[in-house]
Image 1 (cartoon, rainbow, N blue to C red):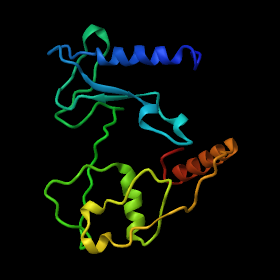
Image 2: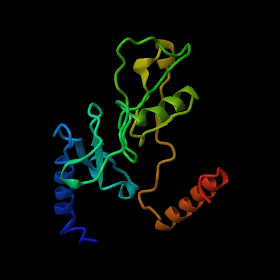
Image 3: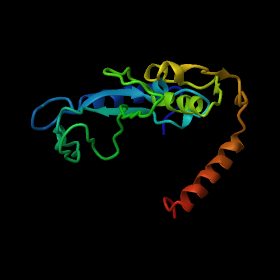
Length: 182
């Protein structure tokens, strides 16, 4: 453990640099494309629960061993499969149906745009505090009509720390009922 105010920023910089210096033992190429701070990627009242660092491994390089005895990365047969425990910011969204227009080169969207789009299709207002937006560029003109934003279900500015415990208990109970937690 380090002092969060005095030592943490320096330690995160050191870890970030070390991760960026990881090289594939066979080719000498960098194994990591980028490392970002969780605080740069996430915001909001639960942002303190996010990871300190997010490691984005290269997709175009098959890394089986790292230089300098740093261990091994599970061999991946090809891009974009990633090493165990890695995360990738890109996903796949497939739209289909009469409300969507065929698009040759769709604009990239954030995962945050999924919930507002679903709310729109269920004729529900999109809360103003949502980070995402309705993906109107993928829709027919008729489906774009009536996009509503409203100040609904505004979260309290004050956050009760006890509610996080209650939320955790609810989530754990649900995961247990699904067989994910014993």
